[in-house]
Length: 170
Image (cartoon, rainbow, N blue to C red; front, side, top):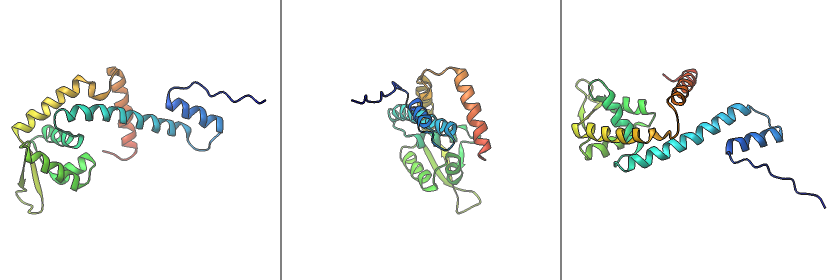
């Protein structure tokens, strides 16, 4: 009677993929596949943690990032179109987020002073308060990067910055 082949005891899904990639001798760039898989898994872990915290503050990720972009801008005002480009979302998504946040008095909309086609968005005092509260809450949970050291975060940011630049971002 043939013995069943024993499955390796691999609990990390990326290590599991590495094991079977090598065992099957697959073609392709194994290292980039594993890096992509690891990055996407970590992105999901961070996003889930951040989304959960933002929900407690009545925000979603797009709302928070839109408010933070306004908060960080010199005047607190940006064009909706530039917000969409900055956040890597479609203009419709930025407009819908603006609608939600304006309804809550967290920002206000105004016509561009010289371009009738453009709309400016400005963060309000209530918006600044809300985004400050959410940022303090995200800081308390390490922005979803639980267990990471400052060195881990610096190395990750440096690696991602280099890779974004290589891909033509910024």
